[in-house]
Length: 242
Image (cartoon, rainbow, N blue to C red; front, side, top):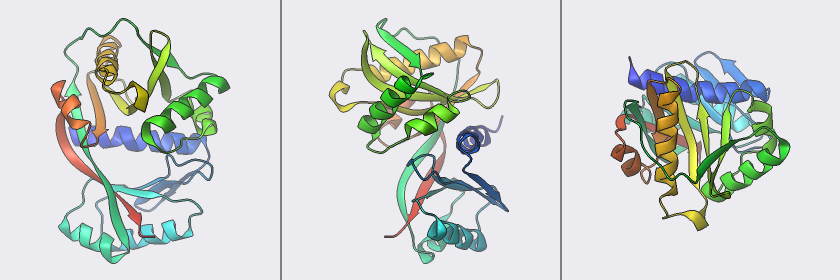
C-alpha cells in the first residue's frame, strides 16, 4: 500500500465530500478547491498532479477572485516550488506531518470517555462551538449539518462533560482518517487527548479498519508517535500575503 497516497486521498476526499455536500466544490485541470462563504473550513485548494509554475499562477488567480480566504496545500513541494510560491506572492502559513499507523493493537482508555455523533442542529451548534474553542477558527454549523451523513463529527465527553471534538472520515473500508481532534483549553493537560486517541484506535480496529491516517501539527506529533504513527510526508500550507 502506498501510505502517502492513502493518507492524502483520505484528506482530499474529505475536502471534496464536504465541498460536494455544500455545493462549493470546483474541479479544474490539475486543481480542485472548495470555497464556503459562511465557514473557514474546508476552504482549501489542492493540486491533483505534481506542482509546476502555471499551476501555482492559476492557484493565485483563483484565490484573488475568491470572496473568502482559501489556503493552498501541497505535499510534493520542493525548494524550487517554494520559490515559485514566493514569486506568486504566497507565504507558508503552516506545516503538518502526514502520519500513518497500522491498526494491530487495542488500548484501554478512561471508561468515562464518550463519543456523541452529531445528528441534530443542537449537536452541530455545540460541535462548532467546541471546535472554535479548541482550534481558534470556525467551521459553520450548516457545513456540519449538510455533511454529517457522510462525515462523522463527534463531540467528546468525559463523565458527561464536553472536553473536545474529533472528526472521523473513511473513503474506503481499510483506512480511517482522524481529523480535527482537539481539546478545549480548560480541559487540556488532563490526558483527554491521549484517552480519545486510544479509544479511536481501538474502536477503528474493532470496526475492521487496517490503517489510521492523520496530519499532525508539530505539537501533536509526539502523542501520535507514542502510539506507533510514522511520518510519511510533509504537508505545507500556503496563503496569499495580505
